[in-house]
Length: 77
Image (cartoon, rainbow, N blue to C red):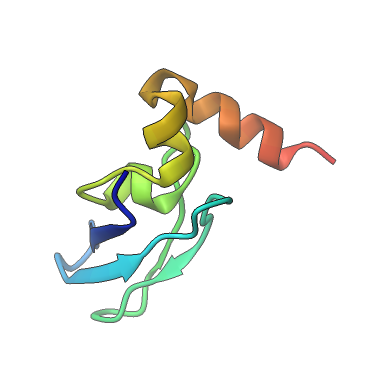
């Protein structure tokens, strides 16, 4: 399992290598280049799955097909 991913901002193309949380999904990330707040695409559970070169640890463990399911569970009250 990998714990580091490089996020690429879809707005300005800035790349930032970040350590991923191992037990949760990251829903927001502020681009260090342009300041845009990145949010996951509708089909993804977190910003690493949407904009990273490596998906988040929960998705690595459970599989990409479970990415949107993880987001649904995280959004539940």
